[in-house]
Image (cartoon, rainbow, N blue to C red; front, top):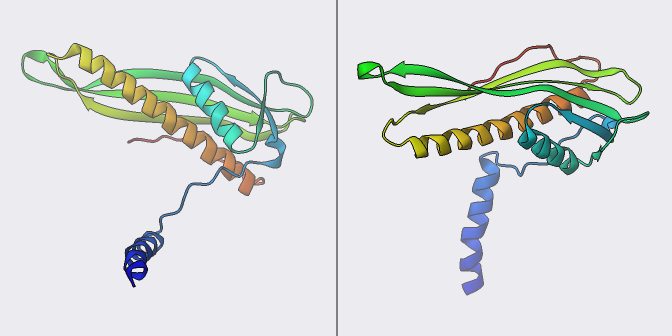
Length: 178
C-alpha cells in the first residue's frame, strides 16, 4: 500500500510531462553526406568548439583536414557587434543590443552544394548601468556566449532541414531576434 502511494505522484508527474508535449532533445539527423566533415570557422573560437561538439553529438566525424569524400562546413563570418538602443537623461546610454552575425555554407565531399550560403543574425538586448562597468562587461560576455549557443543550434537546425528536404535548398538570408 505504501509503495502505491509513492508511485502515484511519479505516475502523475510522468503523465503531466507527456501531456504538455515535453520531449528530450535528440541529436540532429544530418545528411548522410555529412558523416565526415571538415569544419572551418573564421573569427570565433567558441563557435568552432561548440559547433564541433554539436556535430560530434550528431554522430559526425570532424576531420582536421579536408579531402575527397569529406564534406566542408565553412563559416567565413562570425562576428559580434553592439548598438545603443535608448538614451537616458544627460545623454547616457541605458540600453544596448549585442548582435551576432554569422554566415555559413556546406559542400559535400564531391563538391556539390548541400546547403547554400546562409546568414544568421541574432541579438540580445540588455540594460546598461553606468555605475557598474565591471558587471556590464561580464553581462556582455554572458550574452555573447548565449548568442554562440543559439547560433550553433540554428546552424544544426538548418543542417537537419537539409537532410529532411535534400531537393529543397533553404533560401539564403534569415534573421532572428530574441
